[in-house]
Image 1 (cartoon, rainbow, N blue to C red):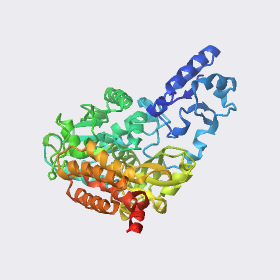
Image 2 (cartoon, one colour; image 1 turned 30 degrees about the vertical axis):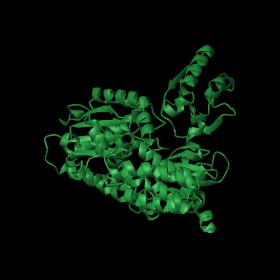
Image 3 (cartoon, helix red, strand yellow; image 1 turned 180 degrees about the vertical axis):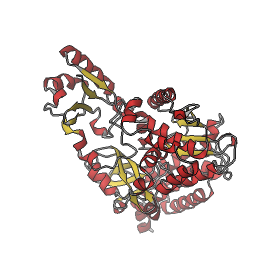
Image 4 (cartoon, rainbow, N blue to C red; image 1 turned 30 degrees about the horizontal axis):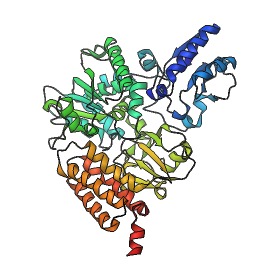
Length: 517
């Protein structure tokens, strides 16, 4: 019987040589007459160990990593196919503290199954949620999602059930489900990992959403820089269609749902739902005025559910195990789990799925192992390039939408980027303005002009030119952008700017200027 060897096909793993490792293992096994079956799974999320090679044994999967092509021959010499000792051996994968301390609901299959194997997906509880949904009335599906407490995982944290209820209540000859997979925030990769590592969970979630609101057509608006996800999604959609899980007659129910992938325009602002819809319609990605809401007049003027990848990928487990099961995770009004992405100056970067309530300090040190440089972590940015910079004094804040709001911060997409004590926070504030200036769609003046002026004023502060006067100007400018911008791009740029200014004033020359005065 062939020995199963698991090597990730995830693009992060491939970027550090997973394809070459797979090829070397296949060649070496053939040379030695070893009977193996190589399975290209998703990533477990331990990026510092990639490429991670797992071998299935009677005791469970044994992990070796990070494996380089030049390590392969020595691994065979050490009998790694049977769990032999080697300096890259980490023992049973499931026993690793990084994985043991997580609550993997959305990511339950990622890293375990062959992503495009429908048989693997079904064997690991896949499509159970859809089968239950097919037996329920649309109103009951919406109520189940509402009762679960699921909120949008893309940034706004709007209750998913309320959005679905609005679309369900609209009378229309056509309704749409749109997945916002234009993952553009710095330090985020959970959407990509789902689409590359477990595409069927997204497909199932979108199909359930379609049944809930009466939609028959869906689109995945995929970030243009994700070519591997494009291939995997299209492969999985084709297989789901062939097996009757998509198409004109879903599992013989007479219900239909057509799904396709559309590549994004490559603009950050197209992550905003109305700009996304404009782009999906073939237009320039400009932000729309609201109202009307997309739930009422969305894609091609029809009622449209627009949800993030993680939001939709959370739906199957809610329908499978019930609203209460999902709701029992988390704290306050933040229910369920959040896939958290650790990046930046961090020793152990990767993906962690935890129930809401874990603190930043636990994530940075218990999971992340502190900074990669070994120096103190001075600041973290949570929620992408428009998220606040948080100082060490706020590291004990639990991950909870309301708790973050209390400290004028956002959880966003769950990306955490760490910086050690060598960071210049004035330059980071300048970058926030610069990012907004480059990515602005240009439709509203506060964002288009304010961001450009912000860069100019920050340059004067960094050069030491009348910092007190120019900091006052930055605050006025931020107030205008915060309250006058059409969408969150301009409206949230003040978050990183003002948080850097408030928590790290010494980097802006304020103390020196005030003492001189």
